[in-house]
Amino acid sequence: MNKKNLDQLVENARSELHDENLVAFLGELKSGKTVVSCLLKHALFNHFVPKSREKYEAIVTGGSTIINETLGGMLKDGLFPQGTWPITSPVISMEIHTIKGRGPGVVKLILRDMSGENYIKLLLKEYTNPEDRLYDILTFHNVEKKPVGPLAHLIFAKVYVIIIDCSGKNPWEEEQAYAAQMITALKQMKELVRDSENGKIRNPIAIVFTKTDELDDKTRSLSAEELLKKMPELISILKISHDGNLKCFKMFVDVEEETPEDIQVRIKRDEAVARKEFERKLQERNNSREKAIAKAGSDAKNKAIAEGRNEQQADVEAEEARNATKDAFRNEPEEEFHFDKASISRPIRKVKLPLRYSHPQYIKFISWLLQNIKR
Image (cartoon, rainbow, N blue to C red):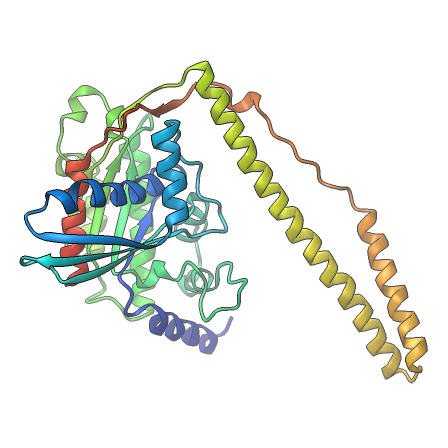
């Protein structure tokens, strides 16, 4: 990496994402990022639009697959989604139109999810040089050779949603440490791309506490703002690093423990998903091998011609090189599909049907997003 290349990447990302109303969801593995973004859509269509004093209509313009899979699994079988795959960055985009009243006109919301593994790798990993982190974020998994990679929104989002998972044994210590570290990393990135003010993040930040139903009775009765007060390290970092709108929200979904029948349904689903991912990786490997075989032949032919051999001899040497590469791949051990059913056969919590969740908080969340995106 050199400074010129990094500057060009930053400008590519800025021009590509400047006008997008990007909302970045940040949080650890299985903290609830995908569930929150999909329930936001559910609350928008089922509670916010029908019951608002303003007259709105809303349409989904992208991400129908992830919405349908997530909400479908929750509403039909009570199953929470599996974690987001590390190489993906799911997008849910919606348009909200004000038909009558003093609403914000037309707002296009683009919700960007990311896997917990990528969150750890790019925002929690220690970097000696912040520019290296910025480069890794802008180029991460850019297999399609676009101007920037799929996680560039981490730098140029208009709103950040930080997910705090309340289901751990001691969420206040671990979660606040991770969130504080992530905000510090974001501040460094914003400074590098000259998108901060007086060394502080200006973008609105929402702190979303998830799985609050798993808190003890006394803690569960606290407001979202009172929950944040239990995280003094995070509050301190926010004061140092952030100078924008800050709002807290408290989310939950009613859950219950699985029955034996539920466990079998979940295992069947998880096995199908794991097999699909195995087959995808297998296809990627086979494609990579085909390219390597073709390259070996091409390189051998070019070398033979450069050394003065005729076309026919060059073709023979190319074929020999291809066959040698094929033989080398044949000697590699073949991967087999393995799925450990025993490790996931213990009962876990599932969605209690019919679906009940903290939709009043989602309505407030949507209103807050609309106000801050429009600003």
